[in-house]
Every structure is written in C-alpha cells, then in structure tokens.
Amino acid sequence: MYDKKSYDIEVAWQINEFCNFDCVYCWLHERDWENSKRFVGLQDTEKVINGFNKTGFAWLIHMSGGEPFFFPNFLQVCYELTKKHFISINTNLSHKDVFEFSKIINPEKVDFIHASLHIQERIKCGQVQDFIDKYRVLRKRGFNIFVSYLMYPESLDRFRKDYDYFKSKGIILRPKVFWGEYYGIFKIFDSIFFREFNHFKPIRNLLKKTYPNAYTKKQKQLINFYIEKSSQEEDEDLKFKRNLRIRTVDLNLDKKWINSLISFKGMNCSAGKDFVKMDQTGGVVRCIDENQYQLGNLFGGEVELFREPRRCSADICSCPYVGCRYVCGNTIVGGA
Image 1 (cartoon, one colour):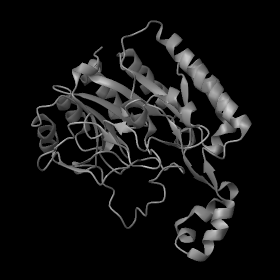
Image 2 (cartoon, helix red, strand yellow):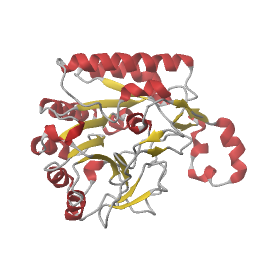
Image 3 (cartoon, helix red, strand yellow):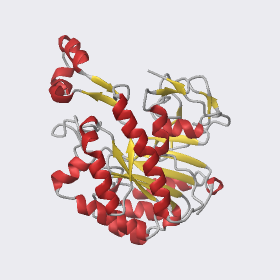
Image 4 (cartoon, helix red, strand yellow):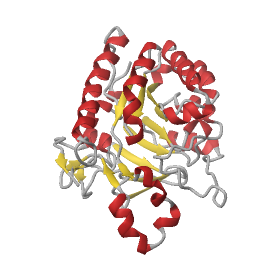
C-alpha cells in the first residue's frame, strides 16, 4: 500500500443528494421528494476528471452522498480518477455496480471503502445477504473495506445479536456513535409539520433527546466495549498487518465523543491546506463548519488553497474524524 506522501491533498466530496434507502436518522429522510429534484450528480464526466487533473495535485478523493454509486457514470469516474489519484468511498453497498467496481478498479488506489450497514433498510428490502455477498467480493479482491453500524437508539437492543451474526459471516461490525435528535415514540413531533410552527417548539424541546449526550451509562458501556472488541477482531481478521495509513474515517475515535460533542476552537488546523470540503458542483470550502472560506470551484475555475494552517473558529466540530486528523496538536476539547 501507499503512504501519505502518495497524495498532496484530501477532499471530502459530497457528490450527490440521492439515496435509494430511506433511513429515519438520515438528513435526506425528511426531503419532499415529490416537489424537489433528486440530484444524482454532475452529468459531465469529463469536467469532473479534468477538474482534478488540471490542478497538478495528486488527490485523495473521499466520495459520499447520498449514495455515490448512483452518480452518473460512477464506474468510469472512479476508473479515470484512479489513474492519477486515490479515492475512498462511503456507501451502503446496495447498487449492482459494486460487483463491476471490484473487477475494474485497482484496490491499491482505493484508500478505503466505508460500508454502512443500515440493518432496518436491509431487512425491509430483503437484502441482508446481498450486503454480505458484496462485502466478501470486495475483501477477496483486496479492498480495504470496513463496516459501520450506527448506534441509533432503536438499534441498540439488537446490536449484540447483529454483531454475532455478521461475525459468523466473516464481517466485523464497527459501532458508530449517533449524533442528532431523537423523539422515540413521539417521532411525529420531528416531522416537517411540527417543525414549521413555533407554538409546538416547547413540546418538541420537552420530548426530544439529543445524542450522544442522551446515551445512558449502560449504553455507553456497551458502545465502548464493542469499539474495543471490533477493533481487535478486525485486526485479527486481517490475519497480517498491512502497511495501511490510518483511515480518515477512523471509528476507533468514536469513544472520544461518546459523552458529548467536541471542539477544536482556537487551535491551528490544516483544513484548507491539506484538506478541503467540496459540494456537488465543485464549490470548495475549508471545511463543513467554516464554509465562509470560499476557495474556488474545481470544476469551473481555479482553487486557491491556504499556505499555512489557520485557527479553527467553530464552536463544535461537525466532522471530528477530519478534526482529529488535521488539527495541529490534536487535543480534543469538550463541547455541548
């Protein structure tokens, strides 16, 4: 495998807003799809490829959505990008093209594949075995793939059973801490209707629980135990130590924010220099929290990066995996 010197800069690219799943905890869940466009991604493949190539940099391109595999000509985009760059992908592994991807893409040019197991959606669609089959194919062909399991309140009671089942199939589930609001049996109060009227706000605030703060002591113990267990068993499952660079999405870090959200405010961070965030149309900003730093458009003009790290101004880090990787000194400060 390669080390960090193999690329110059990492970009987190949200390539679309379309997903075939409808997970209740996803930001796409409440979209009014009947009255809005499902943006699957740019249609101009050449513009995407040329946008990265013309910079003269070697990129690590982290693609998420939505579901990246629905991006137009996604396999062609990945194939062309990996000629000069490296990629990584967040995916639910549901698209049929995963099998073809495993055949035509060089695993040495794929930093990692983060496969999210949305168990309720898989059961609803009858596609649990489909997930297992695709994971096995990717592993067999040498891809650095790992599986996350969101510790959503409604999934906590079934996690042990799911962990044991998937382990029996050769898959280690990595717990991922849930960030967000939860209403339980009162979930109707999180609907668009109730959010639009101010006089419902006191009721909503009374009923909602905000995670990760709302995890109980017992739930935190469960999550921490399986963070450690899954990390050890994933290493054992590899059967040998590969010279892998630490993944930007490092699920071992979740134990650092299981009690509360975190902040790097006031600390120097190399986001904007060694890392950037990019939207669907190529607009580049420093990071998701500091989008006031408009650095240009990769697909329609020039991009000007910072020359030195700059202090973080965000009260809460919305992407702590990135924060832990690029903040200079990497000292976590408790947040809300």
